[in-house]
Amino acid sequence: MKKGLLFSALFFSINVFAVSNPLRRICLEKKGQFVVADLIQDQVAACQLGHSVIGALELVYLAENLSSESVLNYSQRKTTCTGNVIQMTTIDDGDLKTICRYNDGSFIDLQSLKSGRDSGQNPDLNEALGL
Image (cartoon, rainbow, N blue to C red; front, side, top):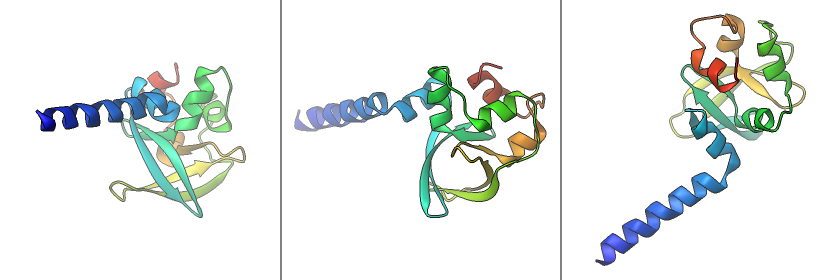
């Protein structure tokens, strides 16, 4: 009985955290995987959508009808990085991604940006961005 109550409380607290964290929630709503990653002297929240990675905050902005440089550039079919190209390492599994980080702090993985919006490699990203 006590184990059942403990398990229920743990399950409930995990679900409450997922729902109360807007970055995690919107990523999950967009059928993505929420990840935390290390950048140079920084940690960021990211959303992996298929093979693509974008800042989780960009999805929140999009839901509020705000835009970020990463989403604008990708949406406008720009395929070159006008920001800084840096490495991002996910905390959970140590996966290394090269990203384009713009002056506003937004980012997108470089491979998705370079392959472009019309690429067959980015359908999950396109769907999440409403493209």
